[in-house]
Image (cartoon, rainbow, N blue to C red; front, side, top):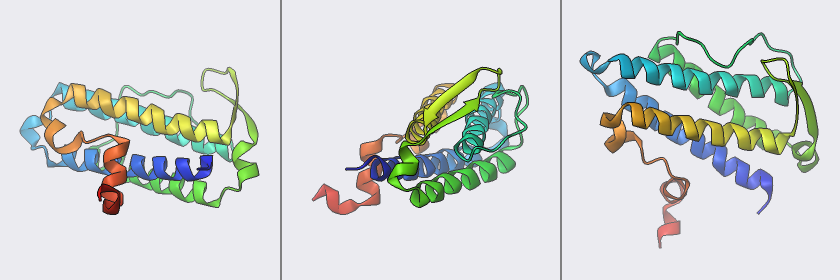
Length: 167
């Protein structure tokens, strides 16, 4: 299996489980929107900001982000829309990449001003693993969503996406 094929599956997985988590958060009633809920939104916003920063880095574009964290998060409706748009961008971006482009090393600057250098494959892998870490953090902050949204395992996604794998 090529890195591109694997990253394609991982990015689709990320989009799928992000979608499940966002739906579960949306299903929580207003009475459940506690301090932990707002902390969860800040965590998801951080993961999203990192996704946007690396999208710019992958394209060798500048960006206006001066930090990867914000004390305030947008509304769940806005954040969910932004995350879903960004997830689609990553799936489409990966689909367009050639093997040589995937291996190309890109220089960039972190939001703290430090220099960075990674291949596009490494950046895409970072986006997937970073988001997974923070989805887990949200699950710890909001254990009530665990039964509906925390089927966040790659093997489970592969079998849901391709039920023939279970036969």
